[in-house]
Length: 247
Ligand SMILES: Nc1ncnc2c1ncn2[C@@H]1O[C@H](COP(=O)(O)OP(=O)(O)OP(=O)(O)O)[C@@H](O)[C@H]1O
Ligand SMILES: [Mg+2]
Image (cartoon, rainbow, N blue to C red; front, side):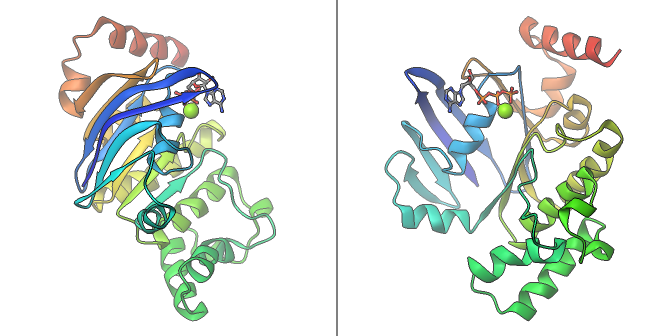
């Protein structure tokens, strides 16, 4: 469904992505793991054209695009099929949960208000927050705000959702609820690319893993062998360093 070949990105003279390849099929959950500074966020930003790649081709739903030169119109069309969930939620502070979800449907997709509201309510229900429809972000916990952001993503009925560390801004006790929502989307067959430091979650939910270090894919492939038969010393060391942090 989504295939990337040879993605490169240089920022301020430094090559941040050095030729990344990946393939995601419908229903895949791709976990993107790796140490800080490895290029995970830059990769996601390039995948959604928040940042322009310097080289690379993307094939999405059968259509091939040259990432550096693809037109704004084609990017806009692509974005209607995708959604992005940020670490810091990015909700409108002066809008209710419901309005945060309907905004994009009404403004970007020109959906009639009543249709947008019924779709938004279904999405809020999907993340367990229908009762918070009239709450403002300041009246919600971080975990609830992130679930509103996920509802906003889901409401657009995307073919793929990108998540950049969706739980890393949350207090530990709020992380589980957000991961449960992502897990339930996975069970429903939603295609997702999730940058995360939650290795246990990745192990339980992902179908594929991309391990990024210094702008390269040190490993890319099915999750089972990645976690159960990991041969690369570097990745074993990475897991051990996380285990130590958990202690
Ligand atoms: N706008 C920018 N200007 C300069 N350097 C940048 C910029 N964005 C990213 N970088 C550099 O690119 C590298 C990769 O950053 P990126 O944020 O993609 O890493 P990451 O894998 O997401 O890390 P983390 O796990 O800490 O979020 C880092 O060395 C970072 O300093
Ligand atoms: Mg990052």
